[in-house]
View (spheres, rainbow over the protein chains, first blue to last red):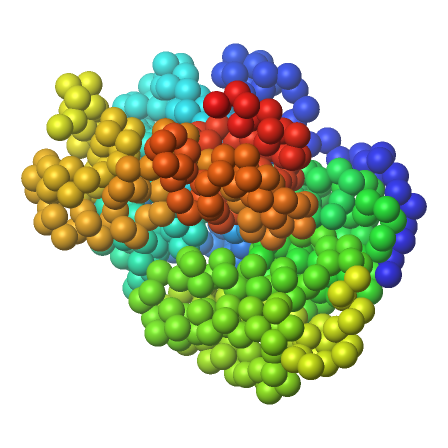
Length: 434
Length: 154
């Protein structure tokens, strides 16, 4: 178990640029007074491909979970096409343990709008949809107010700021479906369909919304774009981890004294985040396990966190991934089987039902895990769990199947003793029955 | 079926999308806001309004968990029980709510006033445990806060 001294002082001197500590920053006047929409003006004075190049050289990588290089993604959009092009900004934010985009809607909506405008200009897009989960009704209204203000100030509409660039931004409200955070399901949802993921290829840049070239970027990713334009790619690429640079919003929840969303440069040590930023574990209990980036990412043992950092490479070598940087901390008294059973139930509930391995497999995982939770597991069920998970992984249209398999695989691999102690008739369970 | 004001909004929205089918979700939201739930007749109405099949509308309504095809209680209390909330005691919160309202999770009280549901992660993990009532989030819940909320609604 790790125990660093609890220190409520933030460990970094980082000056936030995504969620700046400025009163009423969500208001357009305050945003403008702090240099807001300057990046957009700057972009408008550049050639679109220069803007894309700036983002490419900054090494910004997507903040939605896959860490894909944003600038590179933008270059996939065809330059010569007779079809309309679209941008879809992904604010579905439904990954358990993730609550960062919500902060952007509430505290910095104009930076999201400005980033959207810059992205549209760079890719020659006239229409953008910001997809927001239906549960965020309150935040949808906040963003809509900001959009109305931006329009009133002439940043949205036709021939913006007396240039040839015209742009419309619409909010599309979801209606309760985790799967709509998957980019192709999100596009189907915008088109008015059920949120079924599409088979790739064709990829969205060729065949996206209504068969037209489309780029999908996460809300936080887009909110980083004005920062890159303002400070330059060189500055940005030197913030945090070399191969995965920039500020990142890290959400910490579960057994910590001070849960919340913290902005920091990438590459911060996970233990620093837990003990310094999030105030440590109540009762100094020590960490049993950590989910580093939302429930889909592989679970890590508490005793394996030394030296692991919040960036793509470090978490990959530790056997997990950054995901949405939504950390869920579990103290030494946590019933991990109960946690995993709850996660399995979630994927079973959210599977869209298109692919048999996922539709059936997620249900089997949940049922098997319930047996362990009720101390009715059989010894062979441990391998059966792995078998089911392995047969889901890689065999489905979208990544939800993988996301359902990974927590199970990593838990069995790293906490096999937890399962063994819950096998029917096994006396070892006694230690949990306190 | 839709109010004049909503119909006007529908006309505006037609400019936002290249197909009328894309208005399925926004129009269903308007209907549900207006009527409280989406009846079979309402689905047929939406199908006509948007020139799509009633089967398509039914498919959408049943796919998305936030659309209700049956009446829910006047106050719909949705308790998150996903991991971050679970680790901070959502089980107790749900039990307290069920006890105070005399209504089981997944059902509506006999007077039609309250519906309790269990929901998946609502993006409130840093302020767990939580419940949502309509668009309002109630966060950092304790049993005392549940008592206060129930008292204010009764």
